[in-house]
Amino acid sequence: MNIFNCQRLGWLSRPFAGLCFALLVVCVVSLSFSAADEPEPILSTTVDGNATIMTFGAVGDGVEDDTAAIQNAINAGPTSIRLPRGTYRISQPLVIDLDKVGVTSIVGDGTARIMMTGPGPAIRIIGTHEGTASPKTVKPNVWQNQRMPLIDGIEIVGTHGDADGIEAVRTMQLTVSRVVIRHTRHAIHLVERNRNVIISDCHLYENHGVGVFLDDVDLHQINLSACHISYNDGGGFVSKGGNVRNIHICGCDIEANVQNVLIDSDGTKYGTAEVTVTGCTIQHSGGPDSANVRFIGADPKGEPCWGLVTIANNILSDVETNIDIRKARDVVINGNTISSGYKFNLRIEDSMNVVVGPNVLGRNPPYRDKDTCDNAVLFRQCDGGTITGLHVHETLRAEAGIMLDTCRRFHLTGCTVLDCDNAGLLLKNLEDCQISGNMLRHHAEGKEKWQPMIVIGGSEVKITD
Image 1 (cartoon, rainbow, N blue to C red):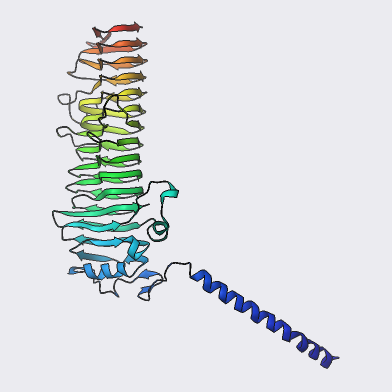
Image 2 (cartoon, rainbow, N blue to C red):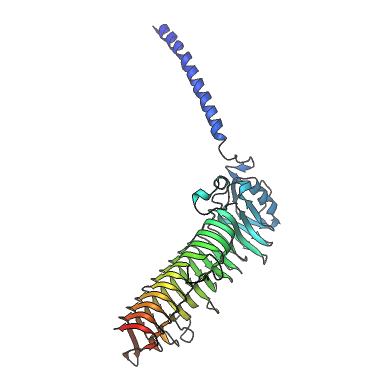
């Protein structure tokens, strides 16, 4: 019986073995075909998928020039260039040509420093994307070789007057995170064209140009979040010229940059639109023409056509003008704490369809004394506006706490204006406006009294208690 069973099993094993061999051949062939569709393998000069820059000759002692070593590691991609602890002195830009080297990242754990001793950006990222943000316009080579270049966890310090931090051109989904950039000209410089940029958890500090500079760029969709951007002589976040849509600035501390947030489309064809600044602390500098948030729309023929601006739930203080809006449409300003504007807490001019909801606007003693803070609120040459629930206090030297000058179709209601030097409201040359339910009070000589409302000129203005 045992011999019979053994013979039977042996007889069955021959076809079974043949079947197993056939399946093995099919699997090997299948894997070989699928491998042909995968990106080129990481070169043998890498370990665990990461370029070993020391293998390429990098030293990281802050003395030797590591430019060639790091550039050779980049050129050996596609890979992750990991920088261990050290100071890597470079004298020329590290160029990441994405279409040539493939998907690339430069990453550290916060202990690596790149010291740029020459002119130009320490890191220049070059893509070829010419489409929009729509997926159907992104070519296959962009998805294959260029998507989401990543700079993370390093410090960049400039020692040359024309050194920049990071420059990007024609990139798709550039992501910069946990990066410190100091003593450069522009910390992050976006030029020509870029799409879908994320900058988060960065410290852009004490640069003699701009912290984040949108330099006459064609750019749709940029998110700036949880960043500390301070003491940059040319501005904190600056967008000049170009064709820009979807700017989201959220949860940042932006201070002492003279122009903390400047979006200037003056003289451009396309301008900038779709801007939100929310949940930030934006303050300090106080120099001539300083502002915390300044938006200047394009200058097309006819009525203003760019804007869609929301400024909400921020703390803003201690500059010449806290919020300055010009040539914009469809603007909402709501829920902000605004103080110590040396000339204006809020100035809106040549704009239309403006909604200003509950905000507190006044003077905070630690940020300069009564001799420097005017805190005026001014709407001038605007068409279409709703102003409700403003709490304005201690406007000094200005003609009134809230001033409407040459505006039409405005509704001003439910505002509280307290303790101003002069009038509570100044209504000058208004047309088709309604003013109702405002409280204008002043505490003087131990008693409360009503502050005056001044009305000059205008037509079809309805004023009620």
